[in-house]
Amino acid sequence: MELNNQTLGCPITKELSHLLRTYTSVNDYADVSIKTKVGTSTIRDLAFRRNTLTEYNMKAIRELTIVALKNCARQLKDGKSNIKQLENYLNPVENEQVKAS
Image (cartoon, rainbow, N blue to C red; front, side):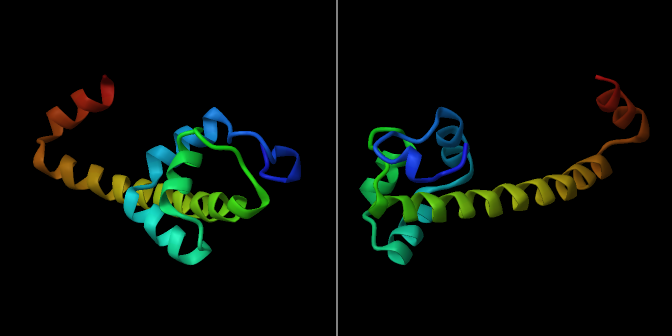
């Protein structure tokens, strides 16, 4: 669901809330607050669906969504690299057991 004027007055979706909580931190909230001039408590309340979207605070949720997307992509990239590193610690038989399960 796209963030637009039709979503004003409503909390964000449960799905977006889950993604924002998974891929952002309180430090991200602070950075977004500085950039958008929306308070960190408002951003937190929006992410946890305890507040509704307004024209004013929607810019913070849009920015937080961008941060979440970047963090998610970074975690995916780091995860692939970490898998290879972990595989190096196992012998070939153990690697096959992990892949088979």
